[in-house]
Amino acid sequence: MSARPDLNLDSDSGDWKDAKNKLSSMDKEARRKMYRIDFIPLENVPVWRSTGDSSCKPLYKANEELNMKISLFRGDITKLEIDAIANAANKTLLGGGGVDGAIHRGAGPLLRKECATLNGCETGEAKITGAYGLPANYVIHTVGPIVHGSVGEKDKEALRNCYYNCLQTATKNHLRTVAFPCISTGVYGYPPDQAVEVALKTVREYLEENHEKLDRVIFCVFLKSDKELYETRLPAYFSQGSPPKSKL
Picture 1 (cartoon, rainbow, N blue to C red):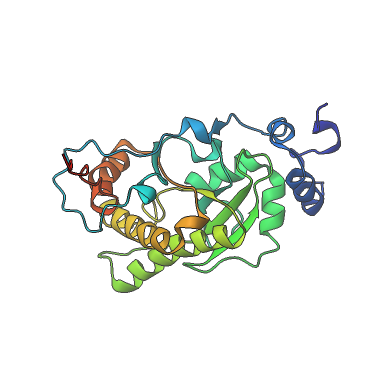
Picture 2 (picture 1 turned 90 degrees about the horizontal axis):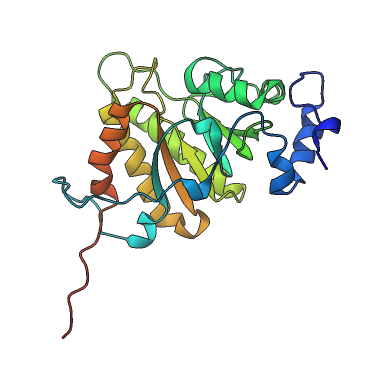
């Protein structure tokens, strides 16, 4: 029996709190009837595997348990059917261009209504909302730093805070799967090759401390160049261990 007749996610005339409560009480099959876009289930997002031919030096000890929690996915973050997707938002939280605009379009007008109650978001902070018509259950909004010229320590710390606070918000809300877009690398001007280092370092160190609280962290990229950056640098942060030597 379809849930659509008594829950309209296409209109801004509804009560976002009521919609959020109803959605959270639905099982997966009922929720799928409410999606406003196509979806990609988690099982279709493979765990990242090193090709083994990386020349970059590992920065951390090999840990296969942590490696199994990492995915690199090139595609539309709004389609991921997971616990939470991170949104590279602006300080108003009321929608914008790029990923932010796509998330708001996919979720529908009730997302903007809930965001309007949050009094904005400062750089590096994270705030959580429902995801409404998206396949994800929640959206965690964060505001990345705007870089003018070279990247300073303040910019690095702000970007680190974006990733860290999103992860902390996820675990505080008992969410076990989360996906990140490339925060701040678009019109905000953070050089992608430097941003990837902050993203990977922050996620690696958070997982070391909280590995039992998360099942999967997905780095979701749109550009081929960003995918190549992650493919190049992932082995430095999530290296493949050497196979154990035979005792025979």
